[in-house]
Every structure is written in C-alpha cells, then in structure tokens.
Amino acid sequence: MTTELPAIVNAAANTTALALLPDWLNPENIVQSLGPFALIGVCLIIFAECGLLIGFFLPGDSLLFVTGLFVAAGAIDTPIWLVCALLTLCAFVGNVTGYWIGRKVGPAMFNKPDSKLFKREHVDKTHEFFEKYGARAIILARFVPIVRTFITAVAGIAQMDQKKFFSFSAIGGVAWIVSMTLLGYFLGNIPWIRDNLEAMAILIVVISVIPIVIEYLKGRREKARKAAS
Image (cartoon, rainbow, N blue to C red; front, side, top):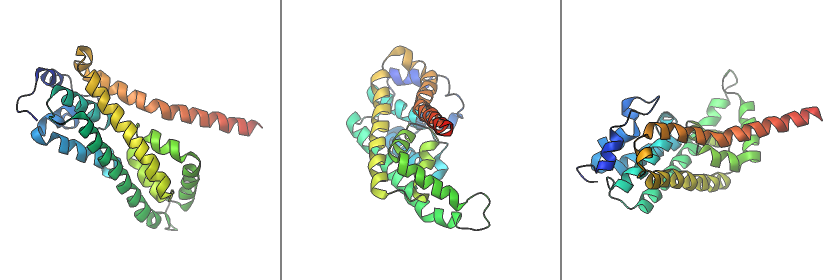
C-alpha cells in the first residue's frame, strides 16, 4: 500500500461515518488505519465475522466494498483477483471454524435437562431445516449481516452433513466475496458512489436482506396453503 492515498481514497475517507456504526468500525477508517497491513487486517475481520460468534458486529459487506474501492484506487497494491482469492479463503475457513465450534460445543449446551434456553428439540428442528433448505440457507446467509456469523455454528449444532455444508459454504463464499469486492472495485470510481459511501453501505445491507425476506414470505405462503388444505 502506498504511504499517501490517491485522491479518490482521500475523497472517500472524508465522507460521513457509516450509519449505525461507531467510528472505529467504519470500513474506510479500518482500511486506512491499517496502512500497509490493510489486506491482512481485512482478511482477519472476514474470518472472524464468518466463523467466530464474537465477530457478529464486524462490518462485512461494506468492508468488502470499500476494499474493492481501495484496490481500484491503488491504495491496496495487490491484484484484485488475488484479493478476492485470499478473502474467499478466509471466509471459507471462518465458516469451517464456526461449524466445528457448533458441532463440538453445541451438544453439551443442548443436552442439559434443566436448560430453559437451549433445548434438544431446537437442534432437531434446525437439523430438519438444514436437510430441507440447506443449500439456500447457507448460500443466502452469506449476504445477510449477523446471520452469516451464527448460521455456521447452528449448522454444526444441528450436525448438518459436512460435505454438503462445506460445498455450499464454498459456493456462497465465492459469490459473496467476489460480488461485493468487485462491486466496489468497478463502481468505486464513479464520483457519486465514491462521495456517498454511507448511502451505498446502507443500500448494500438492504439488498442483502431481500433474498431472505423472499424466502420467508414463500415459507409463510406454503405454510398457509398446507393449513388451508
């Protein structure tokens, strides 16, 4: 990464902090503050958000978008294909880590007979859910903040088939990382988008939730049809 940021990045850095995020979680501030270690830092954040339960509050979509913008600006001096490859690897390894956390810790939590919050029936229902909607659940969850962090552990707790989980996790990881990063890479040079990163970040989050809302509404309609028959 260069010591002095190009004009495009300086313009982005002066935009208003992303809504609902404290200043230290602003993706622009994160990438800038890490200097020559920006890519390493982004990789670690993506890993944590995808696999460690404590990483649910970290920015994901907006961070990928801003990373793509910084690569296009030359502030991150790494080819975009390599950036996407490294981030995809971190996202996948994060999911694998989250899965095994759920698989190893989950049974002990749900097998307690006096537990009011964690019940075995919840695991059984979740297992049935993944057997029926596994592919869509794992892939779509990649695009939904917070959900993408917890669904990996839930899949492990429900003991979703490992090969199925890893396969769909890889597909979702590639789709998520490549789409969000390239979006920033190609659109970040458009002046309006560069100067309105706050609005773009909010728009990205809203768009990310749409597939899950559609699936939810479809499930509601299917349930209503079964109840009526």
